[in-house]
Image (cartoon, rainbow, N blue to C red; front, top):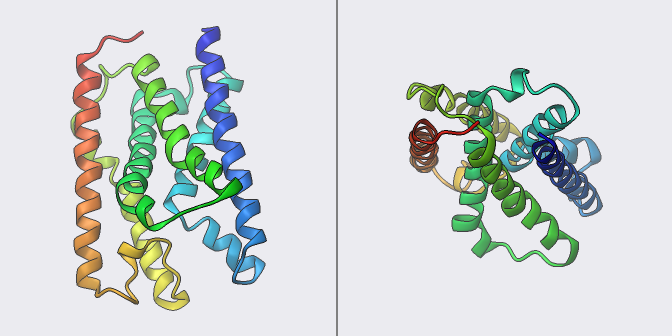
Length: 203
């Protein structure tokens, strides 16, 4: 139990530190006003998902282990989301982005350290026997709502956090196709995680 609490605290610290430093860097290098920059900060799927991770593991490390955030379906969903953050960054975005200095360390924390820590925690501590195949479809709700938000806001703000959903530069048809690929990735990762969870015996 002590090791589990320490692991939860470590994930919370890494996620919060990365978020705070990323916010600082974005405000320091902003190309828009402060209110718009803050909105843009919270318009990144990476930021929102790392925030979910930070809140979840802060609650777990500071409180009882039998709350909403400790449910296998909740922890598994968050693991899928943060894994996709790392997957998309390292397969699609890393090659077009070359951060330096502090930004490099922050990027690695957001896109590598936190996803890997969450995945290790899931393998070690999250029981999968209660997971259902239908969970994979309900877990799509968050990324789909996020996509709708980005497209609606982008239609009048002309800010899109990621190039592959930039409707100003790409046609909506292309954006939809790109979004379908990402949705498929969410679904496949979810199904794989559920399959692994249901086959492993974890306390």
